[in-house]
Length: 203
Ligand SMILES: Cc1cc2nc3c(=O)[nH]c(=O)nc-3n(C[C@H](O)[C@H](O)[C@H](O)COP(=O)(O)O)c2cc1C
Image (tube, rainbow, N blue to C red; front, side, top):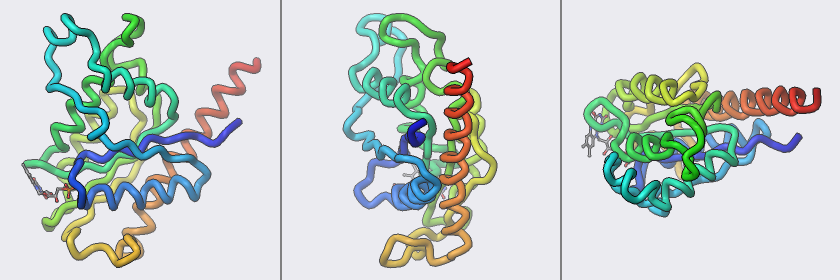
């Protein structure tokens, strides 16, 4: 059995995104727990705003089909998104709405094919005092609706402009450890589920 492979998605494509910094800490925790992590730059997968007529006329955009293949090849998700007015970003919603659509050959059921029982870990960072925690309950619910198994625990990093040291670590060491532990939990659950699947195939 190989190492579980996790996708790392950031809900911001800004060059100096603070959420990407948090994502790297979660990813490091996952790697230390034995996973491989693929960082996805969503700028490489430009997608129109989801629209049913567009999908009916032209099918899945190439970026959505490519992301579906990436999801199919990975066993877990790490997601760090900014909070926009109390919610995760439209980039996350639009990207995963497209990913949840049926496979290009028409097989599969919407919302269940790519993400079903896929472990996920979530975090948010904000320059504000609440660290994006209001958005995390929505992120958790949305991912669960898509079929993800969102691990317990989540991190909202407040006053994020001052929260990192020069090495990209959180100055608050306990928060740093908790952020890493979310990645580690996803890695361990992905490995467990992968093991069960392999054992099931051998029976
Ligand atoms: C449209 C919009 C709405 C925002 N709403 C919130 C909010 O509800 N809570 C919050 O803490 N920060 C909010 N912010 C500030 C973001 O947390 C901040 O821009 C952050 O740096 C974005 O993350 P990034 O650095 O990863 O791009 C908002 C920013 C924008 C552009």
